[in-house]
Length: 412
Figure 1 (cartoon, rainbow, N blue to C red):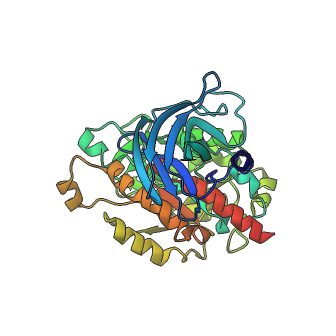
Figure 2 (cartoon, one colour):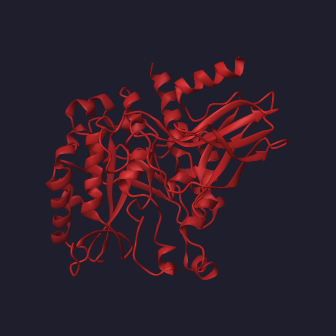
Figure 3 (cartoon, rainbow, N blue to C red):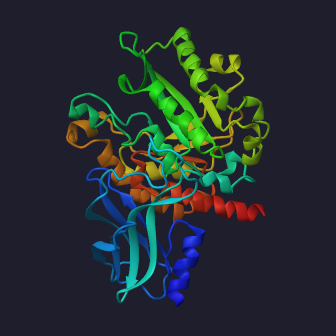
């Protein structure tokens, strides 16, 4: 009865994990696309002795797909042999679904902690298309906001040697937003010989079509009107000498597709930005940050550039040292935001030494560590935007919701 009551209460709260003690959650390995166990039982008196991955559907009984022994393992991360695949988004949140349902929704995959075969905790892998609706009293610059790095670099048509070091994501912008990310890092290329000519680039290489991805953003903003999205037009990477005329092309496209959603810059009237309720009252739930002074000065619906904290390293320990050093430095005069870029960056030596790896391997190196930095090291209490590669490999979305709940309680 006691365990049942614990599970019932946790299901109502819908937080990061639902356990009798400690924390459990599922992630997705970027290389193999297999489900991963994540656990921390350091606060437990009665330790779970096993973890299972189960599958649930409306038409079939629950099935145990995989099990691992956790005796003597207080915390850990382990890759299963269960493929995540490409399941439908629950709650009618597939791109072509109608009538999506607001709220948190579970994929059919669950992680359970067990003691002597009894379930003492469980949590699903979930999407969070409307999590911000709970935090109307918080200022957006004080919140922890999950996001993606090189958000449009999720598809490309090049040889595999290039794409391995080109693709930083594996979901389009609609899917990133539906999952719970609220910060998008966009690098633009104008390819005059192409039709269309407006692309999202990674460096000089074109990846996804800019118009199509902006339409994904617009569709999401309509479907979930209390979610505030930060669209950071960070880089203009092709041609290398990006002209004002090319900036006009980009700004015109932004205004055409997203102008009706863009929050005017005049709402930056506090160093930490407006509270969410103030944003909701305008009916405009998009902040567009544009990294060009002339364009921002000419358009009151564009916000100034967001400061990136970028470690520029291929080593996990060096990235941690850098991010730990700068994580509290996010007050800048022209923007309420600051983005920690929590991903590894290959240098020439890394590519020469590991030509058959790529950004997905690097993401698998850092994502499990990032979960620890944000929780055990309590970074989540002080960071603002946290942008990652292959975001399904970390729990930044769930951790953000938990961190903002704590901030809301302190707010009173």
